[in-house]
Length: 247
Image (cartoon, rainbow, N blue to C red; front, side, top):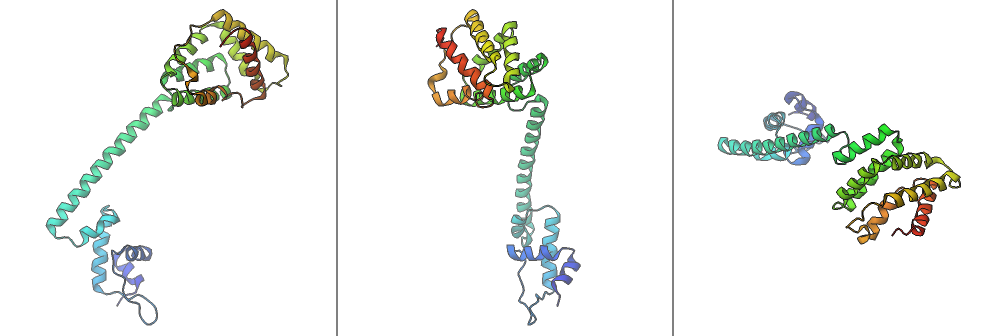
């Protein structure tokens, strides 16, 4: 009779593996001797070897049971099924690799290329990485909450960035993030922005961002909570916009 250690050594597996096969019901657990040890025989060597051959071949433990006692025809049919499952899994993994490669090529995997290009231009202008990170997240919010309006707003944003006056205001707003809310330059930016909006007067958006007020507030308030200076700037701009007759 064999101890568990001797059985493991003969077949070339670990004691832990044998205990695991017992727990799964793949290898019958023998009665213990009077001294409390498991005692194995020649048949256990045979059965364990069969299990090892299958697992070494890559057969999942969940499928070992149907193969270990199968006749040749049943074995061929079962391995054919497993092979088909593996082929399908390989195809899924290959598709995943291709998807990951496409995402890696884009550089920014979560946003459309046109937004990424716009951010690259902003970086060239000198916009800080801190603001660009917020911009990326704000665009993610737009894509999720207002997917049908994202293209319209992107087109508007691109047109605004073509204007030197707007670019200057954008850069000054970027700089203001660390200012005190009482900094007089905030008033200058707020008034400059409303003056620019009055002169620019983009065509009215035919869609209504306020149809979902909760989603609208999530987007418009996103920057507000990042910086006390930005919060004050947005509040002042809203006040001046109302005075100027903007809706």
